[in-house]
Length: 130
Length: 388
Ligand SMILES: [Zn+2]
Image (cartoon, rainbow over all chains, first blue to last red; front, side, top):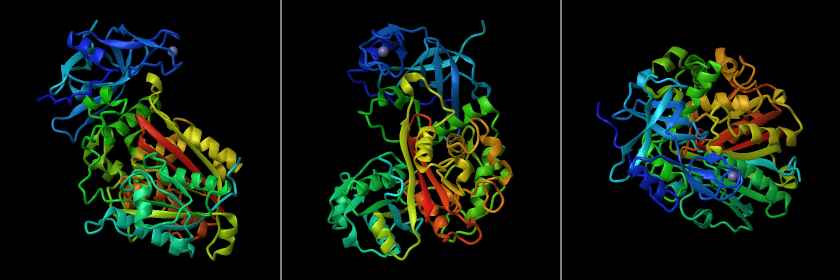
């Protein structure tokens, strides 16, 4: 099955370090230097306390919080919210899988997919069996 | 300051068109304004406050106010998506109470049907929106964002597609009596489930219609309401809020209706059980189900059971809703259903709904909406109205 072309994200001063790391295969998220909490999507100021934030390496492990397969699109694609092991829930696409076998609560792992004329973007696929 | 009793809805008008390839959006706004003023028994020169949202062409309220050649002392273009106009009623009441205007005009209009809009297609990316860098690649469109809400609700509470379908069935029972409704055929649960899947688990018939058209409201100070010949519909309670992704603390099982609804009921000094008729935003069936829970008509997670078996059908169920056919069957002008929610509530309170769907002794009604995208960032506005 043909894979969907992922539109390139706008790269700006708050996202360029993330996408530069993504090009090296590293998955970053943003953590607060004041309250210590990780958040998503990444921001310069902590959305919980307005403290300063910094990049931190993330595991790329998570579980599916919810998803919806867009049947009307050609090819169909699966938008999802994935809850990361570090806590925050992020919007993403589920890829490299049988859409009909996806389940909420399923373990997933990060896989970067190249966007159309832009950087790799963080997608997820079912975690291999333990 | 409480807004209770500070203002009245004196005029309400829903444009009869559902397809207007031969009209401009500005013209539709003005035709709606004319209709609402005529309904109230007022004229254009009486208007001194104007409210509109993102569907109004031009910069904020300026282009439309100039097109209609209004002489204003108060303008407000609060943009909360489809529920903006419900919030505008509260803002108009506040402006009236503060002495900033006497007669407020609220308009909405648009032509998404003539312009080929589909809720399954990608939206233009606003590159400067702070979420764009993190979400644009993943194809969030209207249908799959709401689909994710429904998927999670089903997962946590066992809500079924059959239960969601009952919401469309109820709307279609009402729409059969509305000669202007886009879809007038009564549908069954089986027909909803047999319609094509758009974005799991939402079928085509779980989605609202795409229509051209619009509506307008006139909100006035109490002395003016008393001088007019129309039945008096008082603003009794108001609430507004927004809900987003909370920095990654995402919970798709409830909406901002919890907060805006609570505020409106507190201001009104009544409980959900007192409401005789409810207009509830129905961009999708799941939108209705979640908001019924969030407004307190049933407990969190019990919406599926509540909406089943015709419980939303006027004359049959406990909570008659969207007796015009709603966005699901009647009209969703400019892809924004907020103003038609207020208009049908006003019809019910005046006793001017279609006789087949008119709620008896309808003295307290609610109009509630969400705007934007239920599963990412949405506005929420609740209005409680009382017939005097
Ligand atoms: Zn913090």
